Length: 254
Image 1 (cartoon, rainbow, N blue to C red):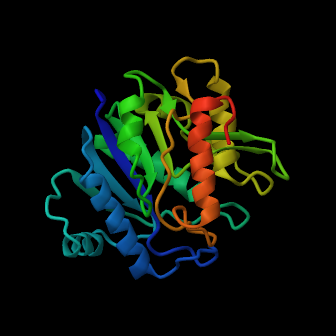
Image 2: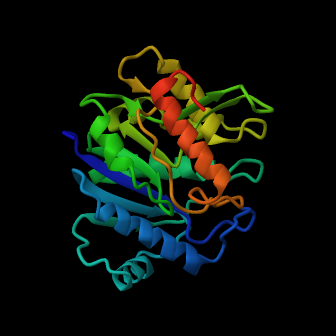
């Protein structure tokens, strides 16, 4: 792993009133976000800064205090931001606010906008196999995302990018993806589909990685529906199948 990465962890500690969240209590969400920050701070990878950005205006001092209570001691490489930026149209998805976080951070936070590569991760989740993925990436790339392109065994074709974890060349994102939330609509309101549309346009570019060489399954609970990413036989079987197909059928993006 030659590249140094800046980590951008996105979060909403106090959800919007019209957001349909499974976990809505700020105290519980704060605890999960602090677990995520500590996870990244302890990983054996070459990183610059960990940035946690809460878009609900919860307050940086309260976040720092909770992090200290949970075992965080060295804050020299951790930056915490908390601004209210979670006001989005009701007919759009929470992803609109997620993209706004990324744009704001890339424009205003020097440690991020001046970095070469950044990892965008959902702050409440952890990714135990992420170091293995980073070790397998080339030294020079535009982005590394995990796409789904599956029309077999499903009712509707699945064409999307998993947005819990994405890796970008910072300059590439600044030049090609800033402001794309303005293209969301009531009919097309998911950023997973929007990223797929935008990034598959670079499919023939050798620096575009649309499918990871290894699986990096998240650990944690989905924010908006009752799904635990790491529990249950169906989830276990799907993760194992997906991991196997990366080796024997890499063209099948399930």
